[in-house]
Image (cartoon, rainbow, N blue to C red; front, side):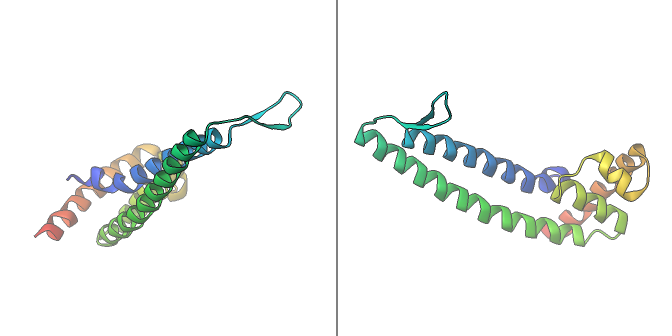
Amino acid sequence: MEAKQFLRQYQNILTDIRNLEAQKLELEGLAMGVTVSTDGERVQSSGRKDRMAELAVKIADTEREIVEQRTQAFYELREIEQVIAQVKTSDYRKILHMRYIENQTWGKIAVSLNCSYQWVCKLHGRALLETEKVLKVDKS
């Protein structure tokens, strides 16, 4: 696995979690059969009990999957932080952390480090090369 792919794992899992949470909210809305009338009051629509049970199972499965994904995100985060900590150059570590843990834009990273966008991109490339070295040593 290349460095960038390794480092992106955490943010990818967070995206999956957000998607699951949105799916869960949609399922809960279907289960509740709640709509909002034009005057803003909640109106309960009737639904079949078997459909409600089916939705309840899907909601429970989604909740379980969210918990599993959060646990996985925690372990991925720890692993990525350990690899970043092994990168020798302080600026490289900062860039990697801001980009792959905090999910900051290149512009924000440049402002934070008080340097140009182009220089941050150049440093990022170097940081990835250093990360590759760390990952190769860890595999040995």
